Image (cartoon, rainbow, N blue to C red):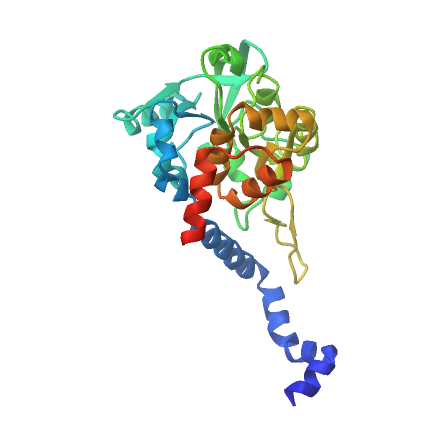
Length: 323
């Protein structure tokens, strides 16, 4: 009977129609389960294999410079195993969060700046929202912010509770390229990633994790299309795009998801500019990608470009063969 059913795909589909309809009606739950599975898969990636190599000891006196702009909560959980090889630099303009970061990292190798980063040295308004994670230098009133509505609460979490005037500085003015080279850059500033990236100057990180949006959530926010073009001209491409965002509930009995906002991972591409970024320090480039779960891509790219493999990669591949 099973053999006959498999010959007719429509018969098979008819058997699973009922559970599919159930999933469609309760898509939010399904969406959450799917995201949970993706998160579990993400956490299962073996990022720490490079820590088992002898070559990783090189980073003890030449650490990887990790810059986190909008560092509410401190170092990301999956990066904590790598703290010994990181020189961490945090930027947090919210004074309350800045004080928390100071306490959290009091006994660790970290620099913490209570300043905002932009493309100019100026004074700007920081809008502190009801849910502090939504605070931004841009007003939370973009023409598509309605897509951020949550069931039962709408967009209340974006209500501005108070404002403060803060100083902004260019990234390349705070971190001088002649003194420190940024190896990994994380940006989570609710809409001002474009302006920050415009202040890179000569810095060319091996990996950039920037929260981007496909449309205007915050007023005058530049979309991922502008950000992507800016970085493409420097030699980067998006290795990982944002996850789906559930459309707010309507009278419809189904709910789609859309690419609205989220973390985008930019890494050097195979252009002349991209290759130059990689060759600046192949071991740090490889380590940066491994930390974020992209060892497979890094191994493909270095083979594709026929770049000589340093000891960190050679030893990592040996460990992979022996696993």
